[in-house]
Length: 68
Ligand SMILES: [Zn+2]
Image (spheres, protein in one colour):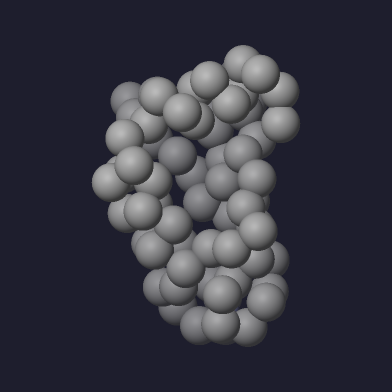
């Protein structure tokens, strides 16, 4: 993770981080918790990419830009 990305992530309130992690959609399990996540900062979108806590499948979560 780059320093710029880390700085943006740190700017998020912890409560919001928790809310995001627990509201990830898995094709197998439905709403689940993301684990082993990393943040991919795009020019317009920020995406949380990781694994489903329940089945271990890959999941992604789009981060609304107004949270950053
Ligand atoms: Zn799953």
